[in-house]
Amino acid sequence: MFLGFKTKEKIKKDWIDFYGKNNENKQISDFAVGAERIVYALLNGKGIGQPNSAPVGSDLFFEIDDAYIHIDMKTVQKENINDFAKAITIGKNQNSYKGEIKTDKDEKREYVPSLPTYYNKGGLLEKICLSYFITILYDRDDLNILVIAINSMPNGELEKHYKTRVLKPGKNKDKARFNISEVNKFELLKNKPSRIKVVYFNESMEEKLKKKLTLFKSIYNEEKNI
Image (cartoon, rainbow, N blue to C red; front, side, top):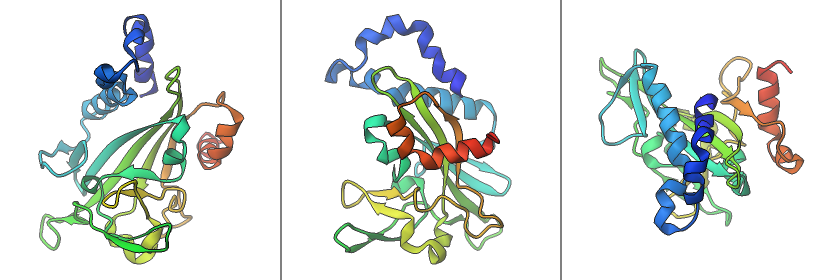
């Protein structure tokens, strides 16, 4: 994945003058456009399960022997680091977690996602619905990647355990965020393994950024046995 992200450097002189100039170039200015090509081509090329054509679901939606899996990608600029390290924006078509959202004013509102907790629930073809988010933190000025992580969001059947800790309010009333900083462990499994896998951590980033990414750095070091 990381090698794929670096392919842009070979032809940088041919596109850099058009990057982030104005609204007319908005489509090619977004880092996510190029990153999505790499991630989706990589996963599709691996032949992981059967892609599903249902119109309601994540950008990547496929079926394996014992589950239906939704995967979406989020790219975040370092200036918005809290959208990466604390709570990531999610769509209703990307998760199954129905529950209450507590607002900053201590109000509560109901959140109803579009995905089921199980497909064909109660039937012979029943399979659990799983939601994953590939998140990339990057520097918009030079397009350097700072962190790549994969986050597993709790299935809606776990609402009775996690309750309101999973969801945070989004920028609009009908939007929500996955509260990854609060819910980053598989709490009901033995030894409570991490819900976050850190694929890459750029050790050369500014110290002030590292301080906000302590959780991710510790997970990365643990996975690499550092």
